[in-house]
Length: 294
Ligand SMILES: Nc1ncnc2c1ncn2[C@@H]1O[C@H](COP(=O)(O)OP(=O)(O)OP(=O)(O)O)[C@@H](O)[C@H]1O
Image (tube, rainbow, N blue to C red):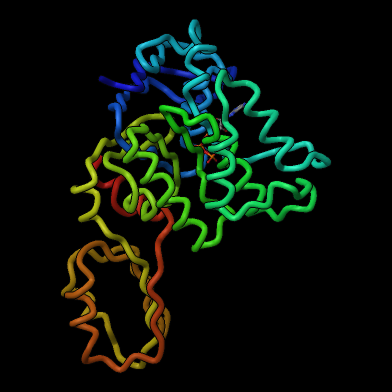
């Protein structure tokens, strides 16, 4: 069964396009990645799924129910972590979480304890005293405390340090093992590659690609910056998968797609003063690879 079915969904804000003709199915029990650069339409799609905004055209069905007509029933089984979390600052964490729990027809106290222990969140602190990362943890507990069947995360990792991010991913994998479906939106390709089974890529309001992870995993991208006294132009021209090459005196900058071993092998004989290998932004990847495939 499909947990989410989006058919021909369009949302316009007045004349400006939010998303257009989105078709998407998320299967029960999968971790589904929704990836696209800023402004692509990820939040618009999610907010329509949650009935926070109304579709201009098309429909969304969740657990087989209409997202507008049966929004209240659906909401009991969805956990949502928005990209930005806002709170009443003078509340204590536990009071806020108990208040959130009161919207659900079940006892959430055990899950609140388990999650806050795992994330090392102090329930007795006041929200106004929390760092950004700790506020984010409050959002995570708030989204999961009612043990929802479907977890929807809108760019959830911003503001989490790498260790906490790892813990959070493990938590999501455990929830998934226990049968939960996860819809994970992000603009960072590598984190989606770590976690998701299938991925939809959204750009300028439209889905441009649907891929399973096995295919996407082969697509690793790195941005290289190499400082050397050698002329590398000949070496680099032998390597397929290089794009966006920028040369300035001793400095070579480019994006590389593919297996890292051939390129490190070729560079082995070169005198290198400094080298930086980074994750390119999704915008860079789109600009140099996806646009060519269109
Ligand atoms: N309330 C609004 N009024 C007008 N235009 C909007 C509104 N919300 C979003 N948009 C527009 O809709 C498009 C999609 O935005 P959306 O926020 O869904 O993208 P996103 O992929 O979630 O990006 P981001 O990560 O930056 O939030 C953008 O062009 C944006 O400017």
